[in-house]
Image (cartoon, rainbow, N blue to C red):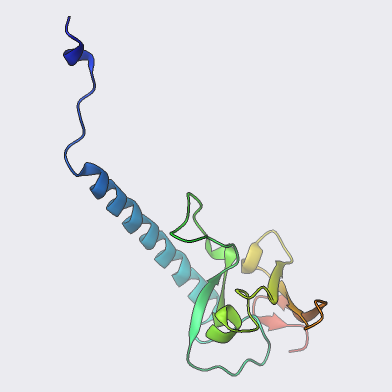
Length: 141
């Protein structure tokens, strides 16, 4: 018996590239579905992070978990770990990305339930920016 017959067949030329493209397309489709759920929940033009935010134009879906450069690394973010925010509170100077804002989920439902938003002052102290009693409804509303 020859060793050549027992060896697995070689993959087709370029198949690893096709598999990588398919994985990327699957990830994008998953992200798009989850972001659509977040928009239905939070609204298209709403900043759920800061009450009274007056930004009218630039709103994005923000991830609460850092994904790192280059994609998901095996972890797919779901809508309960995303939130709608204006550009400034998502990526601006005082934002989730700058680590001056943080979101704490009050139930096991994640951001599908009420949240607390905390802000950091210039001295490193934390203060509550907002507490929700239901999705999108602050205690003071």
